[in-house]
Length: 160
Image (cartoon, rainbow, N blue to C red; front, side, top):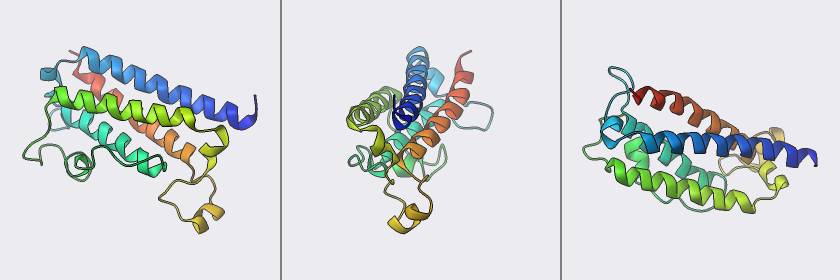
């Protein structure tokens, strides 16, 4: 196996492992449990589910894989804190959106060749990428995997 193949496979395996763990956790949490705060005064589970969905949805254009499916989630789940929005989608809908976004990402990831993971992402200029080639698609995936792992750790606290 070539070096790039080995590295990309390792990162993708970690991504899919964290997605699977989060899916399994979300399947065990009720809609009522998702309404609870992770800790007193902290985000609710439903907000974290929406936040993760929005962040993963934004990966599509960031990795130059297509347009966001749910750009209207940015205001609710990225630029605003929990409880700031007057309305948010029900947990049952957010679960569907979560699955849809991650299925879309998986479909695109399956078509990328190992060397394509080392191409620049869309929020870095050609000039900056020439100076900092680590600002690539794979780096985004590593960052988002860590982000998912962090919030998974919070969501697990809802299991009581």
